[in-house]
Amino acid sequence: MRKRSVGSAELDLVGVIRMPETSVSPVAAIVRRVLWALVALFVAVLLVYLDRDGYRDANGDGVSFLDSVYYATVSLSTTGYGDITPVSDSARLVNILVITPLRVLFLIVLVGTTLAVLTERSRQAFKIQRWRSKVRDHVVVVGYGTKGRSAVSVVLSDGVDPSRIVVVDTDQGMLDAASALGLVTVHGSGTRSDVLRVAGVPRAKSVVVAASRDDSAVLITLTAREMAPNAQIVAAVRETENVHLLRQSGANQVVVSSETAGRLLGMATHTPTVVDMVEDLITPDEGLAIAEREVEQTEVGGSPRHLPDIVLGIVRGGRLYRVDSAEADAIESGDRLLYIKKVTPAED
Image 1 (cartoon, rainbow, N blue to C red):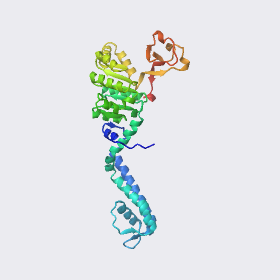
Image 2: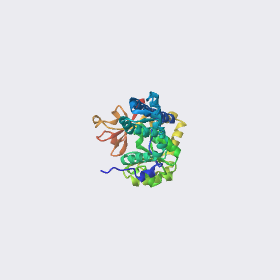
Image 3: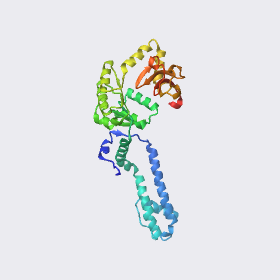
């Protein structure tokens, strides 16, 4: 099989796609390079000193340890005054096979910052190529505002690897915040099909549409559904009157953000503790949370109301039945249970 090289397509995507990086402070990077330079210098000094009889000093008094340090320093820095020279075959062979590679390594370490800048584009292109060839069944979040960040937080709490979450946004500050969490970011408008394609929507498992405007959410959903017919698309809208547009565009679930917030505000005026409980249930980090799981074989045939878990409903054939409905009287094989679980620190 022919090995693929980094193509121009991936180079063009550098600056559009940003892969998560392991951050290293400038001080740590400098210290590390200095240590590598000292290691190279120490190896060169040791080799010269051990074979000092194979070198000739212009003074004719032999090569001391200080002379070895001096020769290694001027040799690795490519200064080469010529007052100390290798004369034996072994010394010359060591210079060819060891000192010269150390000289190259020494120079690379010293100019490592410049080389890092020069090679960053190719390195990012290679990472993008590798990511695009392997990523499947990932989660794409379009819009990283308040709704998008909350959605990502929930997905991460479910144990999804950050590198399998792609954030699409036009705000570089938002993308920087997402990248700091280890997420893959794509700079661009989610209303554009080429941007969604770069984010891997055709191969995504789920798409979260968290746009700031309802008309944008409709267009994003329509485009995403055309690219990914089998993906789970969840969209948020501000106004109830736009829910049917999102569903017609292909959204599996639509959340009305303004009405949901309005209900909570209204409830808080006379039943604030109910609002506290709702907030607890939809916050995955602590307390109680609504979760979904497969039924166990020993639970088949029994009533969900008699289980140790507090069951809210049964998902059967992709349809949700509340626990008080006739269809939920008995658990069937293949069902999934919606229940309330207690979130422990280990699950955070």
